Image (cartoon, rainbow over all chains, first blue to last red; front, side, top):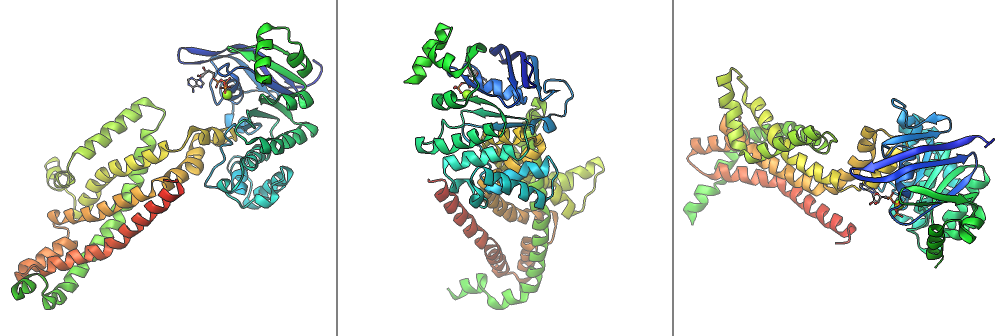
Length: 246
Length: 225
Ligand SMILES: Nc1ncnc2c1ncn2[C@@H]1O[C@H](COP(=O)(O)OP(=O)(O)OP(=O)(O)O)[C@@H](O)[C@H]1O
Ligand SMILES: [Mg+2]
């Protein structure tokens, strides 16, 4: 691949005690690429994302993000992590802080920005996700879709090289899903590199450069959305796609 | 009836004893100002150690907490004040009370803080760490503020208990409220000073108890219980 690789996962393995959940995963993501990761429950999708910023400690293999090896011993993990934005299924906003406070916390404590500077950045990022007027609201006063957009803003404010999404819309009421997808689409248009665990097939068809199917701790096959959803090579992929299409 | 009032509610004697008791009250307040913050700080330390990732530290903390919850505070206090001199450690009453209370209160406040920390879901810490906050920063800025708020009523009612327990200091001759009242009683041969002391405790603690009740109701309402 001629293009610059932002994420590179090599022979990655992860175990929880006796249980091996990642069994040698290889995966690459080029700059500005948007890849979907699909697969049955328990196949290790969330675990794979959490290995990318070492929220889980892999037992073997390497992860390289934007030229820096995350899995190398002695790396400055905290400085690396803020380059890897992460968005969770259940939003995980800090309920004791306003939307603005959620976005500014890491700006101030990790990037050591002054309050004024951090507020400035946070306001412009909240504006980008369409929530400028909600800066002073606490999470419990926001809808699920708004909360998730604040969570995206919180990651975005740190100027990540890549964004990881773990089922960002699956906890949302159907009518709120589109607000979040619209933000993700805008991110893609501005060239953000994204790895998305999600079963939003419509969004995948229209926005994903690539879809990877994962099962039982390995990536079974990958290809374009058309190919994976329409004409997969592997029977297991076919069976799974048929299942989520209903 | 007349005699009963004379024995317990003799206003003249109360007025006479008031300056002494107010001085005692001052000492009690001073003591609270020392032992409550000490206990809160110690309790926070105990809670952090008790939720640490290091197994040996968690076990050591558990032993500490169990031990000092099992020892009656009065036994602990007399041991620190009258027992330690046998090991060559002679403490003035105030320091002895502070040390005994630190050990006892750290265990109790620690359990409350720990329950608070454990009430915060793992997703909060994951989110914090994913933005690059260190383990300590995640604790300090994300987990602890929420944890403390969740257990505020428990922290406050434990503080009420601690204030009441400061009366134990009278047995090591610290001239706090109870000691002063008992002194006044032995001088006057009348129980009214003790009643006055009880009224002073009541005046001190009743607002706190009301406040706890209000917090509990508000927290219960916001939790939808
Ligand atoms: N912290 C943990 N401790 C032990 N086992 C875990 C832990 N987290 C996940 N697992 C197990 O690892 C396996 C993979 O889990 P993971 O959450 O990565 O799957 P997933 O593909 O994201 O599933 P889902 O679609 O349900 O989110 C599962 O069997 C799960 O039970
Ligand atoms: Mg998952």
